[in-house]
Length: 324
Image (cartoon, rainbow, N blue to C red; front, side):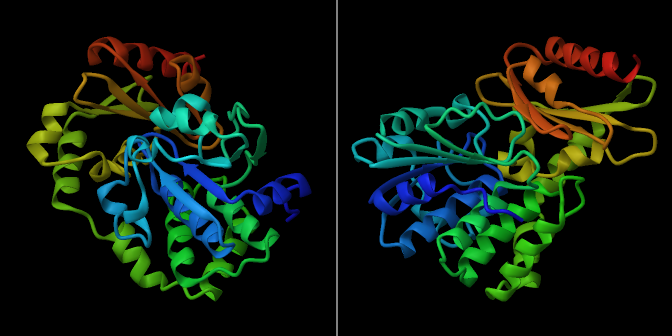
C-alpha cells in the first residue's frame, strides 16, 4: 500500500508546533478513535495538541484512552493554533462549531476516507477506498516513523471496527487487515476491546432497539425498510445518541431488503437520517440531495420539519432507485 502523505504534508506536520484537531458532528467510533490516535501521535512528536469535538464524545466511547481530553469549541476558543486538522470530516459543514477554529488557523489539513469529500482544507489527504479514516492515521504513524502503542491500538481498533461494520462492509480491503496486524503487534487486547466497545449493550440501547423495530415499515415492494425514534421515544428509553449505534442495520439485514433508513429526532425537532444499502446500491446521492453525504452503502443527512413529510420524501427517493 503506497503511503498517501506527501513531503509537503509531512514537512508541515513536523514544523508546526501547536495543533487543533477536530472531528465531525454526531461523532462515531471512527471520528473519535482517529481523533484520539492522531492526537497521541502528535504528542509523541512533542507537539502541543488540542482535541475538539462540537458534540463531545459519545458516552459509549468515554472508555477510550485520552477521551477526557476532548474539548468543545467554546472551551478551545481562546487558544491560538499553528495548524488545524480535520479528521473523518466529509465537508466543512460537518465540523459544526469547530469550523471557526479550523479556518482561523494559518495552516489546515484534512484527513478523511469519504468518497464525497469536498477537499476544503489547504492540504487534503483523502482515500475514498479506505474502510475508515483510521487506516490513514495508521499510515501516518508509519510515514512519521512513530511506533504505535497499546492505547493508540485501542483507539484505532474502535475506529476501524466502527466504520467497517465489524470488518464486513465491502470497503474492507487487504490493507484494513494489515492495519489490524499492526494494532495487534502494538499490544491491542482484542477480546477486552471488543467486549468493552461493541459486544456489551446498554439497557437504553436494547429499549431503543425494541421501539425502533416496532416502528419498522416495508416499502418499495419489500426492497426497503425504515424505522424511526422520536425525541420522546428516546426519553422514554433513557437513550442518548450513543445508545443508537448499530440499530439501523436491523432494518437492512433481512431477506429481500436492499436499502433502509432510520430517523431519530433531536430536541430541536430535526430528524437525523441514517441510510444504509447492500453492495450494488448507492445511497450517498440520496443523502446529498437532502444536504448530507457519506458512502455508497452508508450515508446520512439531517432534515427539519415533520417526520411524515421528510420520511415520505426519503421513501420516494429510495423507491425511485429501487423500482426504476
